Image 1 (tube, rainbow, N blue to C red):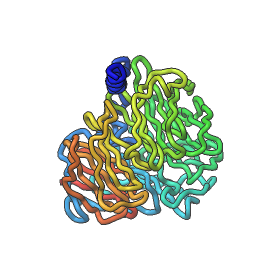
Image 2 (cartoon, rainbow, N blue to C red):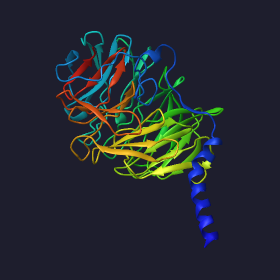
Image 3 (cartoon, rainbow, N blue to C red):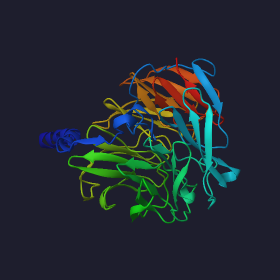
Image 4 (cartoon, rainbow, N blue to C red):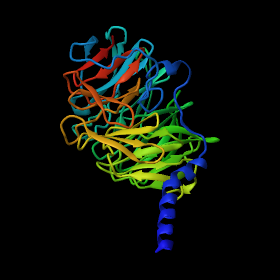
Length: 423
């Protein structure tokens, strides 16, 4: 009996130490953020950090339909793409006539004035879920061009004055619920993946749109956005996809490693912290903590921990400090997990339980994490190991797009307007 007890204790200690053992072997891992002038703005999906972390100060944490509203501008058409910001310009996408017409819009950041709208060339119009639509992918900019993915309509590049520079047909896509993933800018190339009947991940030249490489994928369902990370002495493109997470070589498109465990439907963008990549999946699927830098199938060797609790369907998670925060949009329950170990610190309900009630991804700054639901309610939570809702902001309009934050101002796209919030 004493021997059995001793073995049980040793086994428990080993399981507790397993994540630490793996992490001591981890290469230096970080998200590749935007550098140079672009770091001042919100030039891509989830901002310069790539994971919703806000730099700078002076941002208000409270507002209403009237409080701290600096300006409000009507946005024509329909779309769920998030605002991107460069200089004094804000860029959005929109659809009309059930996706038969697609456009890119520009507004002046200082006062919300409409500047221009450019329509994409006519082309294919696939089907799309009513909550998705045909203008859900967030554009990106390097300060010279604005890059847009319109799924079956292909890739587009415009200059900042609205001149169409090039278009690239990506071929037909029979995508379940339509396409939605946003493009990623990596050095001189655009990285994009589309999981559909002809699933692929590819790289395209920013100057011409010419394909640099294109790798087939075996996934058929998914609407996510890739991220670029550094893992020790090399970079990796991480795709959180159907049934498995896959890393690709950004220069060649060669698959580097894969980790099984994702569910059938995957939307959330990966985030990085504590030497790991965190990938959530499914309507109530697991969250995976993976140590990157491996080769081949790393499901047994590099999977540090998994958690079945609190995983989101649509919103991406966020790593802020030592903790991973998520909201399960099928139950409106927020979850805080200790990033290094996978230990659940707390769970708490945000408002009323709603099925698919959250779409926007969270942001964090000043010791607070902000979750916005589809009704336009933003729950302000104190970051840390204790669940505490500080207050709730109500903008009074349906909000599915994630916010952009620059120079002390929030820029929020609702179902009708583009709103600037500041002191």
